[in-house]
Length: 423
Ligand code: ADP
Ligand code: TYD
Image (cartoon, rainbow, N blue to C red; front, side):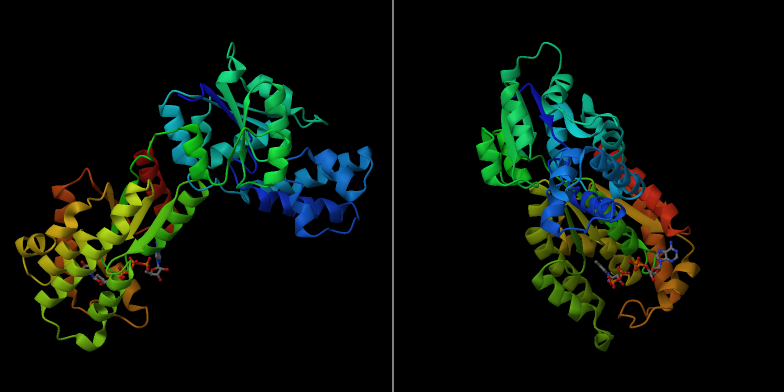
């Protein structure tokens, strides 16, 4: 292990909190009757103690700055804290550091209550041995004191690193004898970090990972597929899940079948074109398989190998449901023609199932139906039975989600399932 303990600043290092902070600062300026400055000035508030920043940039005395901070906190407490996201790649990095046995802490100049609330909301609190921030009464956040509180007892400072995006973080780290690692993807500049004595500078989260975990390749990501009869609501849930995971610091790839890369999207246009209603079932099945093998090679395997979470709207199970059973081509034929694509096996398949009549109504209420969506009720009955068989044959991979509920209720099950998989 390069470091036995790593302390992280919060805003601009773990989370991209600029939006919530700058909007709340702008609110405080207007409540104080001071003209709201441009974005460049507003962004200087991300990182340094607020009271000092209000004195410097709003021309307020200490008492005025204290009042402005109060106004700021009113908006921040209500909405600002959620206008935030964990930087992409941070969650798997923290997990890898934890698994390597590293002590992890947050040392932030933000009220500790907010830091905990945000870290918990965005799912990263569990990686930290200690979370340290200021109290609401603190007027001057002393980063050295925060570092002292966040360090594990008896740890030699030289075995520890402080990661931060501003000069305060670097200066305090050096003063306390820790290695100072600058996060240039945050709100500081290279000059600022270098002048403050940064030992190493990470331009991206991937760089930071290489600095903190040298020689450790990113672990494999995940491949999640979404299945079900047309209109079951899987695309809606997949989109929500991608936003949820993005905000929590995972890198996601959102894709679909047929399609997902240039060649496969062209095959999609062909295979779903309503003008080719007379296409033979074999031709249709081969086109789906051709589209899939290219997609697996170009998108799915590289994404998973790079540690990303690949979310795919439909995959091989669709060919078993629609072509093997719906078109009655048989499972063997589909298995054979899809052999080259079977290098990719989903870690989890969420199968959305509900009352077929409700789903068909939902589907047919839409416009511009494609070639498969105009199929008969019998066809869809075979598809639904096939999905039930797919679940029965592999219940560990395929989890059924009841789609006869509201979007929010379904989404809460989707999150619970995926969170269990993420560990
Ligand atoms: P799919 O990708 O499975 O075909 P979509 O996610 O595109 O399904 O949803 C089909 C239609 O049903 C869309 O108009 C969508 O807004 C609507 N919808 C999705 N989920 C629900 C739900 N739980 N309740 C009611 N309508 C829904
Ligand atoms: P799409 O518009 O993406 O429908 P949905 O939102 O319901 O997924 O169209 C995909 C259609 O292609 C859908 O009707 C199912 C069909 N399909 C197959 O028949 N076999 C397959 O292997 C795949 C991937 C899709």
